[in-house]
Image 1 (cartoon, one colour):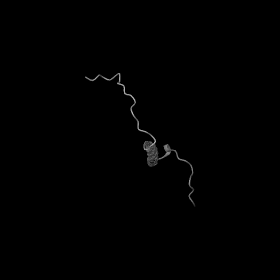
Image 2 (cartoon, one colour):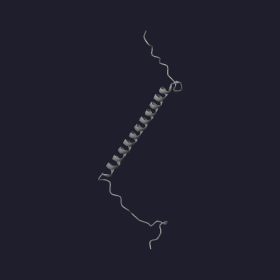
Image 3 (cartoon, one colour):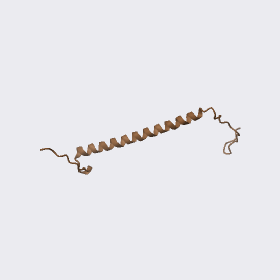
Image 4 (cartoon, helix red, strand yellow):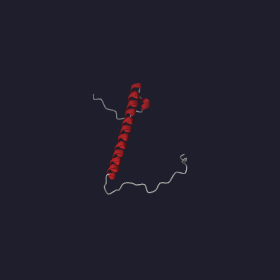
Length: 80
């Protein structure tokens, strides 16, 4: 008398209150894990881009930026 495992999929609306609670908790946990993973991926890509930008600025073949010409703003108030 072996018990056969049913491979049928249960729908959330057919579950009792405990099943619905576990289902909702699992859904929240999965969404949170996806959010954390997406955030970690974004942070690591920003860090890699920042590192590349920093390394480019350390290149001795690139000269410093310099101001060629300054012109006053038209919308600025004249100083007294």
